[in-house]
Image 1 (cartoon, rainbow, N blue to C red):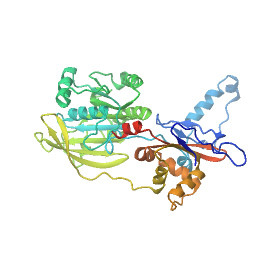
Image 2 (spheres, one colour):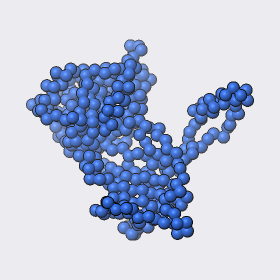
Image 3 (tube, rainbow, N blue to C red):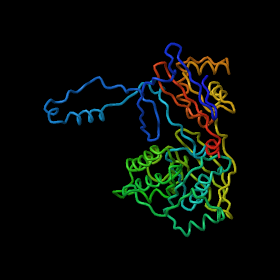
Image 4 (cartoon, rainbow, N blue to C red):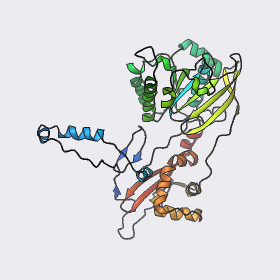
Length: 410
């Protein structure tokens, strides 16, 4: 086993026949990032069997390169299931564990139900690294576009909620361009200045969208959320977009989101904050998402502090059962061990020393860790990387430093 210890040079794994490091002579696997921040090992995608021969006249005119580029763009870049398992994606850390993740979410509710107070509460907790109720947050910079407010009103609201305890990581703006007029460029500039950004709140959707006609359509609704989602995926951040609900009641709370189903169809998830009566202090927050458990939280509004207090959850958050392989990987790390690097076969031998009941094959171990990279990072604080060499797959595991782990869990 190759262990890297604090303030110590790493051991060297030597091949028996060649005298080379077993993880050297790496075969380069091109990286691609279709969702922006993803780091993946990408095998060559299958190319279509039908080939097109460029016109010789066009080649003579110097247009052959353009033809090849156009053909590449029009070709279907498919991958096999096996190739998919060979990829390693950058893990996504929850913004609020169990509730809010990187991606694009809609937060809907009727006018004056308390959406803006919830946005301010959420923004402050994430920016300050304070758990929201009992849910840990990922601390980072937050941009709150309070486009229906002014700075004087924000000052009064925030001071009432948090006294004068501020945080330098929460940034507020009361004016921004529309999606069609440069909002994306403004947000790019913000992220460049604040690379630790984890959350951008847009309050409200109507303030940043522009419609060419009076009527909403599925295509227009889908496109505006799709554009924001592409931006969020590119930078690995979360968008939370405040929107209104219809006056008409519906059995499914999410059918009350104003507009067409295109909004929810393009989003990664949605929240609906709903009271039985406007004068009630209690409300139900319904949550739905692509990769998370549907939930209903009961909340109570503290009128003195303008806080939403947690009352109860309809169901306990579901957690994956312990995985013997991941548990054994975690067991490799001792107090003085910060890293491991070696072939998959060697890692498997070390895992079997920890848990003799592990029966996975060496060639399957790499794929197992590929698909478990996010869980390794979020649950065990271990970053996983994989490369290929002439000797097979080389696995690198790094235990996060206490500071990094604290930032993730606080």
